[in-house]
Length: 381
Image (cartoon, rainbow, N blue to C red; front, side):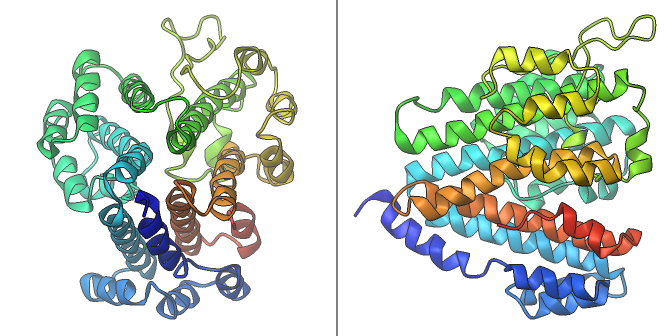
């Protein structure tokens, strides 16, 4: 029996608890927080919702729902890792670390902004290797230096890399500079752990390289929007809180001059080639950039998202559709290769996408977003 036979049988069993399209249609047909709560009580989230109710008492329904979402996701990923033999577990951890670094970057921003720990924790996606308890301890640190030291109490090589990045840049740097250093450390370290020609490792490598492309595109598209004079439009358009638009998009040293915005500093080793990235950077408008992307592997995301972007003028919405290309790719692997790494990797992405969908539903009830608008941002696979 290979390392993947038992693991994949377990994962296929766990996959039966994933929410279906019918669940989302049921919620959106009569969209209120009460309807969402009732639907979750009739799903695999039932026990988590009940525990969250006991914990929060009379707190807003959306807060109770988010607590249940993250408790369920954390438990699912913990079960996935505990079922995995050493080698599959190592590869899954490399993928999960992408959300760890996003959470640490968010905590760095919160610390530099002087946010309270509970405010910082509310912005996180606790779906990586770092547990909710780990994140709470890190969030309680009163300085970036303290946060960096707290990372290494978990004895993970990845966390030591993040501490090194924070120390090398210095806590006095701006949040975007520190955030970029964290991602650079993650991309460099994680790709160094993977062999080019080993099939299972190649899948994880491709996923990380797609992540690099996503971060680069956020930086480039944000820069184009800034040059076009739309830097303030995202808030008005209702951009998603906590989405990729919060990623690193720091301009090259020197900042702007005479009203011009310098091209962003990009990460290396993504799937998009240098010529395509250069062509994107030279685009005058976001619509021009979308035309360039239409001829790449991200073309499906552009095609599906362009109408919604036109209606909302929210760059965060388009980023969601571009990210969905990677989600759908991983989920297709889940169905096509039932014998190897594709099964647990596909499950991981499907579960992550489910968490984001549920958060969109929960927060949509808070802000009174119409069900049709929320439906457009859901990624259903």
